[in-house]
Length: 283
Image (cartoon, rainbow, N blue to C red; front, side, top):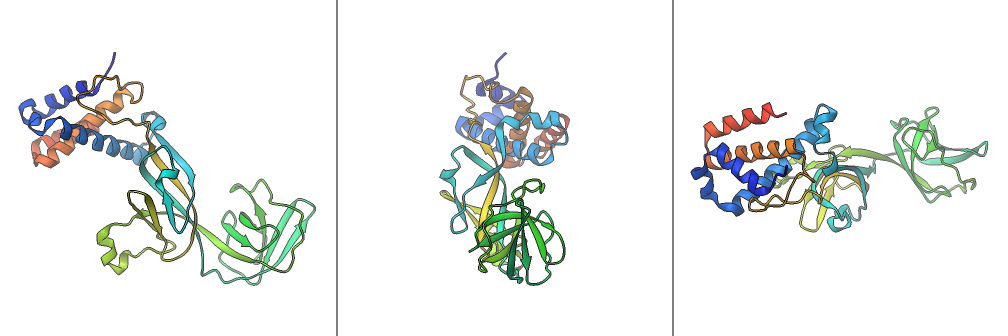
């Protein structure tokens, strides 16, 4: 069995009333299908409540991919298989972190501990950025008391960070905060309540970059969840079998979502309700 874009067109015409839907043309219909593809994958990614549902999009989505950040932006060309961003997590340097680095202790040839000048809100499994010290870099911490923290290279605190170089009475420490971003829409820029902050960062997509904003704070790195470019566009005039890339059930979900988008565009309330019902039934 094969399912092509032209097969989906036939199904779409049946669901929406053939003379009615054919008025939009193949180019517009293909655009509707590809918008439906993105929205369907987004819905399953965000709301998939079981492994069977998630399996429909697992091969189309990558999660937790580290992206290089320079001057608070990601160059999209550096993520070579990026098709559509689903989520962005930023790691932000907290410029308001007040404690100073007073000592670095080397313990038993295995552990490195940092001593801060005063107590803070820094807790176990959070990250710190050390600069100007023999162990410069970003590390996870295990809190031992109010001012002493042990350094690890992994979030589960299983692999101690250690290089054996004694502290040279120099260097700085800052807290690193990890937060997921929200899209920074044009209308948000007119509202002071929607201004990005270190705890509520935002991102804005342009042709060449993903711009990141954490209220002026420095963003050190980012992780992306995204639809990969393995997700080939759906051409309603095409005869190529889509099943090697898209599971059959997913193609039916995409078609139902395309009908919903078409109903919204044409303001056909009856078709819209029918499409929503069919989407619910195929979940």
